[in-house]
Image (cartoon, rainbow, N blue to C red; front, side, top):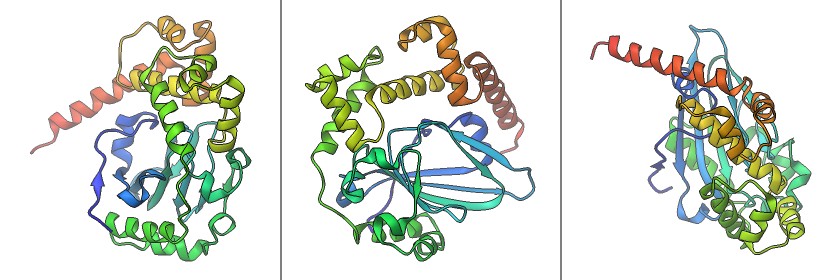
Length: 284
């Protein structure tokens, strides 16, 4: 495998990112050219909490399928429509492959909505021996070794790239680059599709609806801004995300993140201040 290219910066979707940095190591790597039509990135999480209590990390959903190698549960993870909680205890590591939205369709061979909110064995989808694949990856001595093993497995099952993946990617890049886009009709118009055609495309290739996708991107934006402690009026934020009022925004945010937006922002500010104070008190 070619030399790894780390992806810098915080991973979006990690709840309480400042606290998370103290609990585990997360690394992300760009895929090599031969897998770029399929993968967004590799990711590795490693932790050692043997002298500390267990920690539950919540992550927010994206419209992507993951292949995950984990001693707790190895498998193909369809798009998760709700938040995903993972308990870290003792010490361990997990390696994952995050697919571009729509890019797992050629591997699955059927509409992606059939595996939404489901975890399937690798053997059922890809014909791999689950335990052997898990050991091959997680027995790797370091990040390059784990990723090389995952790369070899995936390349043995590689289908033809589907041009619809780039089309979906262009649609989602437009959503991300247009914070004011909150309506499916605007998403369809930008893609040059009818609403019905857009809905069918997403059901088949992504596994969730365009409406869900827009709302999740907007809630990700809100969570990122509040995790940075941004001093923004919450009512104005709710309206900018396409909500009728702050109450509905607060309800959705609490369901996804686990706490209301105001409290999340205050806790994020406190964690940032605590991390800064600890950094100042640590001798060089």
